[in-house]
Image (cartoon, rainbow, N blue to C red; front, side):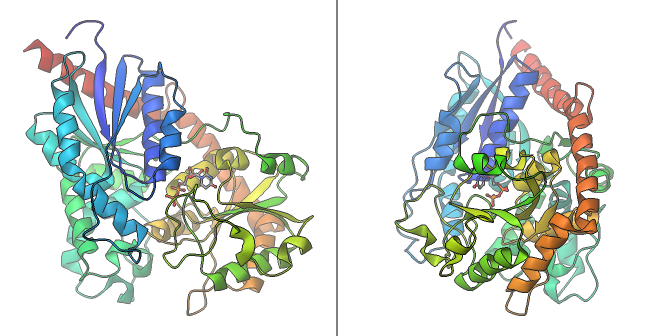
Amino acid sequence: MEANMKTHIAFVSVPIYSHLLSMIEFCKRLIHLHRHFHCTIIIPTVESSGNAQKALLEGLPSTSSIQYIFLPPPNINDVVSHETNPAALVQISMYRSLPNIYEELNKLFVSEMSPVGTVVVDALLDQVVEFANDQNALSFVYFPSTAMMLSLCLYSSELDKAVSCEFKDLTEPIKIPGCVPVHGSDLPDSLQDRSNQEYQIFLQAGQRFHKANGVLVNTFSELEPGPLRAIREGPGPIVYPVGPITQNAAESSTHDCLKWLDKKPHNSVIYVCFGSGGTLSQEQLDELAMGLELSGQNFLWVYKPPSKFGTVADVGAENNDPLQYLPSGFLERTQEQGMVVPFWAPQAQVLNHMAIGGYVCHCGWNSIVESIINGVPLIAWPLFAEQTLNAAMVSDALKVALRPKCKDQGIVERHKIAKLVKRLIRGEEGEAFRHRMNELKLAASKALQEQGSSTRALSEFALKCKSFMNKKTSV
Ligand code: UDP
């Protein structure tokens, strides 16, 4: 290999905002620490979305060592209707993009300027691991979630053999290797119905991870020592805890909500947001609004209108009057107390603001990581995917979150919400959680220092890719 040639890695993302964001931030960190690397990210797209995802990459400087290829959305008209859940749309589009992904990878493997020797693929497109192996490339999985979730994925086939009923019907908690015991109903959605195709897809992914040369996980050794140790002691792939990988809060924003926060006292505001797409039912939205009002605490609420699917497809979607679903008179009554921001706020900057004292969080992993690096305690309010497992982790393992109990139909009532918010912002428990979060914040910052655990894990990965390429080009 020519001395000045960069080590070129191909990344394969999925058309999900939070996954792409995490992968881009990983590439930025890799290049920041190892300047001789070059990254090309291949990104499948979905017809109905993508504006926010495109904006993530358009922000990169043109001189950046990160390049990207947006694939055209595949035709899925034969399988979708307006009744199709956006999550299913994403999955079908991803799978139908596989031939295109392979075509782009094949071009990159033989690139004259800088051939690719390593492929890093998002955990949801694990099929690409086998393709990369067949092409004699190194294959890594980028796992933008917890080591706990990874431990579950790797253990899922064994669990499948050991349990015959639905997991939620088990009376005893489940022991994922190295993790706090969790109730079956806290396992991810795809494990909640064992007759469903999603269930088989989950088991297959766990199997494919074993075939990868390694898994890069957005966690750090000091945060999840138990599951990381269990994975290392098991027959699983080599695991590289490289986190916390997050957006940079130092990037400037002039959003009105930050000016509003500037006027509020230290630790006095509860931030409420359900991720890039999560929404509530109309009934739950009413209870949340009334609960925030009743709490008497300052609040900053990133609000999305209700949707029967529990998500909105595109975060930048137009909506003529999104606030029409709020209870009558709510905005007028809470004028002094709160601010409602439709659809989107600069969350990295919000969580970094001194006025934020707690976060009602849907438990998406990026949002939890952003809370950890800012020392913000949580009210864990999971909606879908693996968020229930993350909620169990932050409340039972890390002990940095309050977790509401729902009524039978899954609704959290206003009085309960008001009480929780007061406990977190003003109570002793909230103070203890804040203290614990600040310890994790410190540990996170240490992990990223020059000799920190995550920096060393990233260097090991970089070294492996570089030596593989050196060997390949010297034969
Ligand atoms: N986010 C944001 N502003 C918003 C909502 C979300 O910047 O109003 C960002 C948030 O900071 C995080 C990501 O979107 O980085 C959401 O990722 P997460 O894994 O928490 O949840 P998901 O979107 O997958 O449900």
